[in-house]
Length: 254
Image 1 (tube, rainbow, N blue to C red):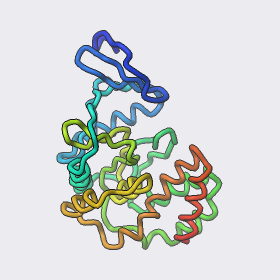
Image 2 (image 1 turned 60 degrees about the horizontal axis):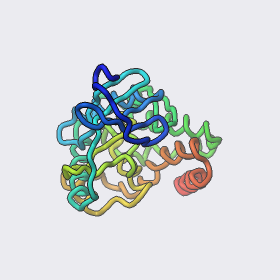
Image 3 (image 1 turned 45 degrees about the vertical axis):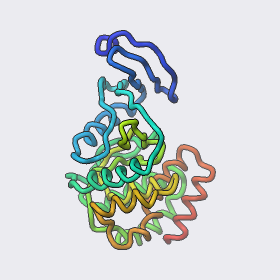
Image 4 (image 1 turned 30 degrees about the vertical axis):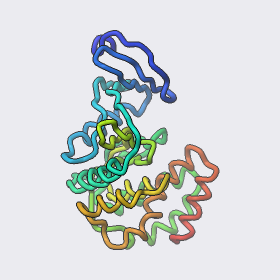
């Protein structure tokens, strides 16, 4: 790593297997672990979408090592929130060639990264895989019989795939930056629903998104449906209240 960055000095620990280091060309984030190669691919795909949210520059990408340029942050502003809506709409407006595919990880949860011929096949397969691992296969199987007609007709689009507020940085340059993607092809509403699961989406963000890419009719009725996958992921990782939330969503949709 020092061959690429020069001498490095530790600045601090950001999480399990994540450090901030000071390098010759500025501060960097160093990550190790089994999912960093997928993360590097996802950052590259997101960076290539014109008008989408910026992502950290990948400096070093190996099978078990990822080095990213540090993003300077500032206070969250209304301008940040509006820009997030516009940029997510731009990201979701460009077509993507496949359903699924992409990352094999959502956070620390392993997922099947197979590609599927249509959106319903992809979404139902991912629901069933996750539900089976947290012993909710039977109620989810009953639910999946009803899901097809509920799904919107758009997509596939390139998604961030793990879009909660902790993965949005309010850059000192006035732009919202995205980190830690689980990039794949899917329904744009997946990103927005997950964002809403972990805190309200500001009206400024939703309006700015809708001005560029209006949400399909009935999107409000699909929010919980698209929150079910992250709830199942969090049930696998943490259990507890996430399982109760997932069971509640399954009950209301069944």
